Structure formats: structure tokens, C-alpha cells
Length: 121
Image 1 (spheres, rainbow, N blue to C red):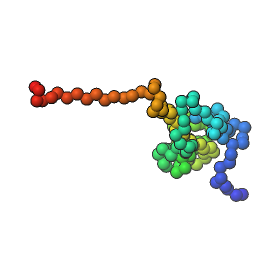
Image 2 (cartoon, rainbow, N blue to C red):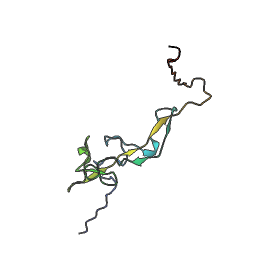
Image 3 (cartoon, one colour):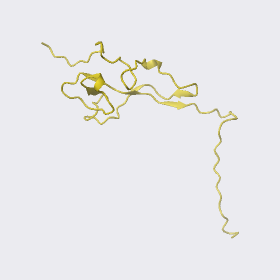
Image 4 (spheres, helix red, strand yellow):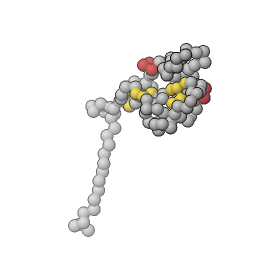
């Protein structure tokens, strides 16, 4: 019998969809995530969140592991023998579109500095 270390795509009936929200229940399509409205733009492309503590909550590729999808909670952890599922967090930054310089409604910030003239007392 051959043991393989490859992880397979989710095809069992109780597996989470390949792309989900953070609860692993709402199926998502990564490239169809919408901005809140037309006042926003994407600041970068999707990337794997590598902010976890390597070796204790994630591996070097950002994966966290559990025995089943329902066991994923608020805490994250590294691989343990017997783990059957894994997930990783993808992030993308959005930002408000800055107002145009010729926009009359654009806020203007003024710094007013005052000094007491020592000569005049």
C-alpha cells in the first residue's frame, strides 16, 4: 500500500467548498468578491496570509490543520498526526478612492500655527 502526502480537493459530502468565507460554510468564488461600492478600489492582488506563528499555528505556506472542517474555530494550529483537513487565509486590501484634486468637495486640511512674538512682549 502506497502512502501519499498529497492533499486532495474537497469531494466528500461534508467537506467545505474550495473557496468559502471565514466560517467555511458560505461558498465563495475568489475572483468574484465584490467591493462595497464604487468608492473603493483594490490596492493589491490576493495573497496568502503568512502572519501566523510558523510551527505553532501555520506551516510555511500558511496552512492550518484540523481533524475535520467543523473543528476549525477561532484558534489556529499547526499540523498534528491524524489531521485530515487544512485551510489557509487569503487576503486582499481595498482602499477608498481618493478625491480628485479639482473636486470642489475635496476636503482641504489646514494647519494653523501661531507664535507669540517675544519682541513685542
